[in-house]
Image (cartoon, rainbow, N blue to C red; front, side, top):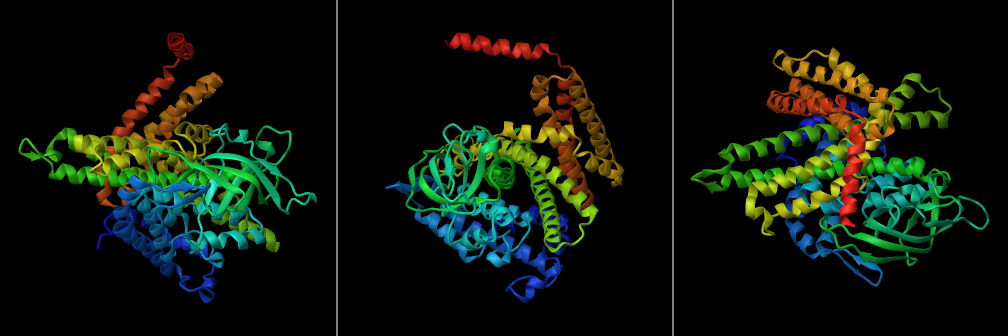
Length: 585
């Protein structure tokens, strides 16, 4: 039977290299829930077996049920009528299949109906779903909404809202974007009217319009709204949770390029009853940023799944397509594209799963700290230090993953159509759907340009330096020694480039070179992951060699560009734009 997990051993390799038993020990603490909940593990081996079984089950559902339905869903889409959205019947079947398999609450606590599994397992499942149907990931992957309620909501809010999402009885939505507030979320205007008695824990009312809301017809909505009258920046924003009810009207479903199985809605709130999450004024500053980081990791996994589907179709076609009396895969121009796809996929998977592990380590350490605070126990200073380090590291790796995977996915889809030639341009093949679905990954949940902004501060402050120091101290097999030396030299180049930009003390020049610095950081970090993987598996040696040698060319180019810069380039760019503007008027 077809299975998207078992047919891809690289997923299992990545899960196992992250030391799942150690993660399970941190997540389960003393495994005491095995006495209270069915299927709760009794030890780390049992937990690890559960993790892999979930991936196996998801892989089977995705291959045998989700993927065969994807083309029809893409062609026919969902329906909006009388202010309500109705999912395509096959989308409803997809959601029912995931509900029956109990896969809608993978990372949520068991007390609310979840499976209490780490982020790395959720990332693997989201990759599998996205390989089958990228649009469906936007429905089953919104578990971050429930995670946010668990982390920041009141006990009553957790009891009321989380079980709905964990069980699959309802879906959710992040309701953030407005017509005039896209990337600039601090410009949100939707109004939150406080309770008349002045008690913030009471019922608020939401009034206004939201646009481009993924699954805006969801049953549980996390809404960013302006709670402080007379404000116009982030300090006036708070986060609210509410049920979908008759006060919410879906104006329309957007007509989109891709991900047609996922309804993107324009919606109005007409004095909708809602409840404040956490504290007033912390909506964007704290809660939304946490929510967005989870969503960005989900999009990275989505991009990875799409790229995997592209690569497999392109390779299969190239092996079967005969031109000039031989398969086109034998031509260097074709197999070079396929090799780049495969190596980029492997590198992207290393990055996504490693990022998910860092997020796990941060969340688990933070949970221990919060528990200690509640019980009045002494907090281990080393635990605090680990939590802070992994929080900063996640703050760099999450935008790394979202940026690299989404851009890689788009390039892979472009080359996938090229491999298929005219056939790739036709709707007879899924390749054109992959190409359309890929495009949104570099836009929503923060554009690629915003991911660069999110990552550059951590690079400038040296967040990755401890990891690079460990790399420099590590012993590698002799066959990798030349690659190791290349990476060590690249680390020095990046540090010199960063110091060079700092010395210039010119904000506009820093912004201009930020992408080059971030590209260098990603290339180097994935190189370290590849070499660690190649040390553990001979199967990774060739991929590591291709990645390191090609990435070093990019690193050298970016380094030269930064070190040879001049302020004149800024003026030159402005002059070019001025010429274009005057010509078009």
